[in-house]
Amino acid sequence: MTRQSIEDRILTQPVALPEPPASPPPQRSPGWRLARNTALLGAFAVLVAAAVVLSFRLYPALGTFVAGTASAQAQAPIQGKPAEAVPAPTDASANKNPFQAHVAQAGVRTCANLFATMGQALTAGSTYAIQTQWDNTSPDTHAVQAVAGMSYNLPTYKTQAAGVVFASPLGQSCEGGFVRVAPFQQSCQVVAGTLPKGSQLADNLSNSMLFNLADNAGQALLVPTGNTCIVVSVARMGG
Image (cartoon, rainbow, N blue to C red):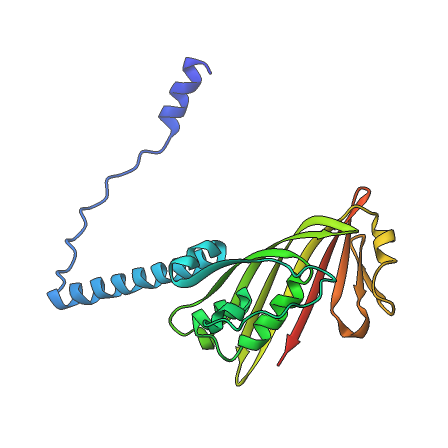
């Protein structure tokens, strides 16, 4: 830009006139200041509460600070081995599986049987370890859930799997369910042929076949991963 053009812009640019001095703001009473500060503190408290709720939703691990937690490991029964008579244990808890022991420890009553039943269905045939979480303040009116790691050592199936089981009170009854994720070293087409007789293809979810299992035993989503298949089993129950 030339010197002449710069000078032209400076000369032709309007000059802002100074504004008259503003009148001093009206004096506020001490009562008004107290009301204003109270309102600001209230708004800040609402924001903090909202942030805490959001943090629990985005980071569920934070819930462990206010929830009861227990871990346990159980061995799967040996397939085909006849039952042996054993002396009755002096401690009644010795006969409980980890799911039963955890709900007893937590004080869960309404969902105790359903949670243990769903847990046994989730882990059947495996050696497993679980971590169970519940609400410490009122365990019988809130959901209880367990995360399970499972090892299968069957003649035709040797692998690791994982699952989640949960139960929640609904009035005087209870509802619950589980999700199990297990890999198979076969294609999903082959795995589909091994599903219980009477299972029906219900849908195709983004190239993953969803089957309704026979006898209302839940659903199985077959997720192809190259030449192998991940089977996501889902079941729910009320009682």
